[in-house]
Structure formats: structure tokens, C-alpha cells
Image (cartoon, rainbow, N blue to C red; front, side, top):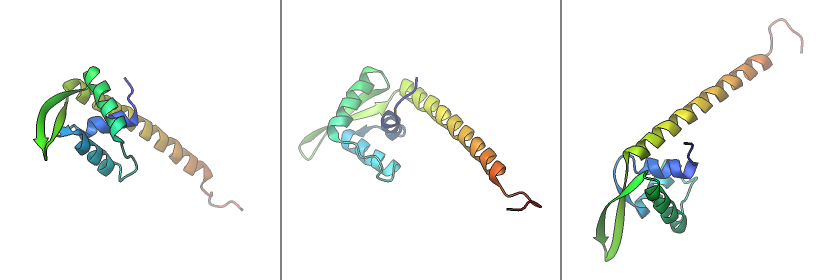
Length: 115
């Protein structure tokens, strides 16, 4: 199952420990050096979808400063999805690098040739 970059990042944000929604947003922002900023509406829709797919599960709720925060955790199925997508992306990167190396070799100036 191929997953979107957003899904991959959300699952990755939950890989090491349970987090609440705002912490997931912060973690994704840090992992991407600010390139991806999840909006609350997008995030909570994605979290609901990932729970329905069995990739994450509610872990526990905490009240912080009078606000209820629901924490989510990665499931084993979610971990498997991250691993599979990581392997798929690594293969794509390896193939792209091989092709770029072939291109560089083809375009490199040859010794003993003019211009």
C-alpha cells in the first residue's frame, strides 16, 4: 500500500511515542524543516482516517490547561506501512541516483577530445 507524504509524516511523528494533535503538527514541522505545516482541520481529518484504517489508535486523553488532548499511537500495521513506504522510497532514490550517475558519466568531458 503506497501512502501519501502527509500520511507518512504523520505516522512517522507517532513512531517513537504517542502524541496529541498539536504535538504531531509540531513534529511534522520539525521533521520537514518547516516545509510541511499541517493545519488543524487537515490533521484531525487525517487522524480519523488513519484510526479507521487501523494505522493508528487512540492511546489516552489528558487535560492540559483546561483542554482535553487526545493522544494517538502507532499500531503495528502503521509501523509496517512506514517500513514498506521507506523501502519503496529508498528504492526510488537508489534508482534515481544510478540514472543521474549514468548521465554524469555520459556528459563528462573525455580526455583527448576537443571541445
